[in-house]
Length: 178
Image 1 (cartoon, one colour):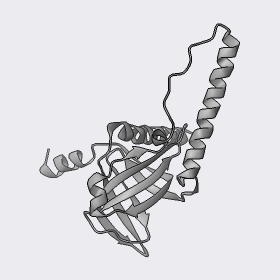
Image 2 (image 1 turned 30 degrees about the vertical axis):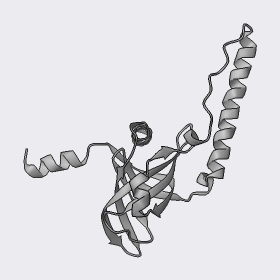
Image 3 (image 1 turned 45 degrees about the horizontal axis):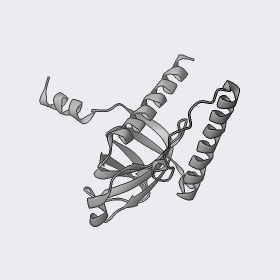
């Protein structure tokens, strides 16, 4: 294997896919970058509790579980709305567990840290804040192709992104077979 091929293999540690996702980007200060840590939005607002034990009446138990699931969904939607995820514009991205690239209307200097507020449109949807170090910038007409490498990202959050990528890849493969 040539050094060029070896370098390419290390750069592509994760599978990637083109997708349309709700996304907003914000340049953060150096001070913010020092403490910035990626997070899943709903995890910060929905209290975790132990569900009650199953009741002897199986029908009642199923109804209670269904109501609990519906309440969880409503709380998640309210959280998404409150934090502005429901109004994010859809953007074309190329995303992987290691980073992403997207077109933007302004350039960001290499080495700057961006807050990426995004919603992965899967079921259930996953709203998250991730942070990316700008590694590449290329002007394309009036816009800029910005590429970031994720930083300060928990494996749980990376796993959600990887699940999304694999789901999109499966969908694309199914479409090709038709």
